[in-house]
Length: 304
Image (tube, rainbow, N blue to C red):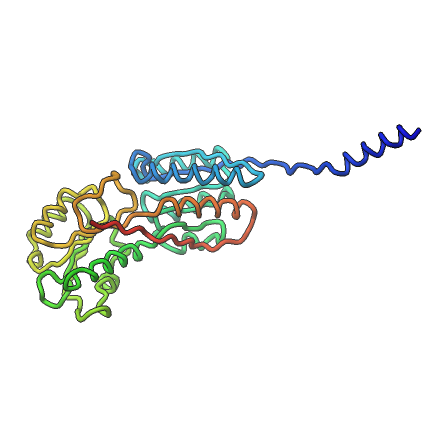
């Protein structure tokens, strides 16, 4: 009898000590970058995988990444997004090809109830991500902050970057999208409060080889101190300007290669931090937690 009671006690104790295992949930995450063949996106995808792998090890859930490439074509990217939404992804991570496509992406996501994290490329209109607070967010650096970092670099150079000694900082912009660079913004980057100077002139030109030729023929060319641009695909044309002794400063959201061109300074995305923050936000959003729509990550300045 004692043996029976002892056996029953052992069984009861083993049942009481056994903890129920939490049920594992598998989340399918759709990732759509601008162009998976570019060095920048290769690094971004690598960092996202590494951070989601860490997330899986540190949690009871599984996160399965499904990668797609927009091939630098917005229509192709939207088609990839449609495919992923139809395939039943639980969340989208999108690096926009064109900043104003955010409105279309958000509309598609709201229709099927799938949250969206815009990464690296800032949506052109903040209202797009405000339409669905907490379910559509941006992880990355503001374009304006990147240019601000370049301007501060210029101000740290000899004579505050004033190469022609006219007590003014004169520059031209070559931008793929002039949305973020208007006259007021250009004046801000002059940073006139940091030294005795004022903005004399500025030019905003759609980024192309023809635009560079336009600048070389411009009456302002000999008066310039610096050139800002945001696409390394015209690096060769830009470098012809360097022969005049101008500062060459670049911002690129998706570098073409790992090599730094022969320019003075460039700001590039901090992919490891962007990926880490994106993984963190993914977990919180899928748990139904409240998150801010802006998750800002500073740019990285690289100079000679």
